[in-house]
Amino acid sequence: MQNVVIKNISDKYSFVKIFPIGKSMCGRKINALSIGNRKNATLYACTFHGMEWINTLLIFHFFEELCCAYKERKIIFDVNIFEVLNKQGLVVLPCVNPDGVEIQIHGSSSCKKYEKFINRITDDTKHWQANARGVDLNHNFNAGWQQLRKLETEQGIVGPAPTRFGGRRPFSELETIALCNFCLREKFRFAIAFHSQGREVYCSYEKTPQKSIELGELFSKYSGYNLANPPEIATGGGFKDWLIGYMKTPAITVETGLGENPLPASDYLAEYEIIKKALVKCLEF
Ligand SMILES: [Zn+2]
Image (cartoon, rainbow, N blue to C red; front, side, top):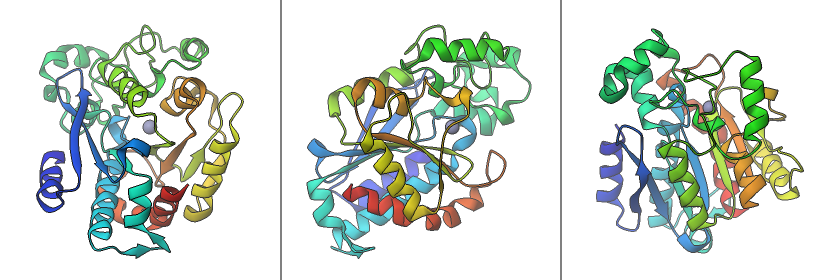
């Protein structure tokens, strides 16, 4: 699916840059698309978890609308898209965990190299969140990883699993290494990590910087999503935690949609309409 959408965008909009930031454990590309000023850019990153591919659909839809607005010099919600993106560009990662999505949708045979391994872990790949090695990417970042490990152990998660196993060490996976190196290179102005579900915004980690709180409040104001604190097992080890704690980059996590994961694909347009204003207004942050 990604390849078709990406080709359409690149055929239609020559000003968009498309490049891989790395590869997954099974060799699938982790694609990035950028528009506007890359030297001073914002990051929207999606689909860290196998069941949360609705955000890939949502972000592609948003990105295409942005491209159209940029080309035609449109104003959306009082934001001059061409002007703002030339000052502060946007990079999107539609899918950080391409293997996890394939496993969730098509089963273990979509990751040949790890097929037997996955079958030993579970016979229920419909609820698969991890990457192909059974590591939860959003538990694998080097931010409070040890404390998170303790919580995982208390919950009986001590090895590769469909969800919530943080790996043998921080940054043990190709996907998290790729994202880490990419952020070290690009030094984003701020970042939003999209997950599902709950219609909530999380901005706290350790001594939460004022900028993350302001960003969270901004997203919450324009989307109507609730500004919340994460449940304990979701604290630490995550991408936004590492951005705040190590990179000192303002960051928030947004939980799109409401219901049970995986949310049906048919939900994505309605959910996009709910958060569209927040996605646009945050470009000016
Ligand atoms: Zn998630």
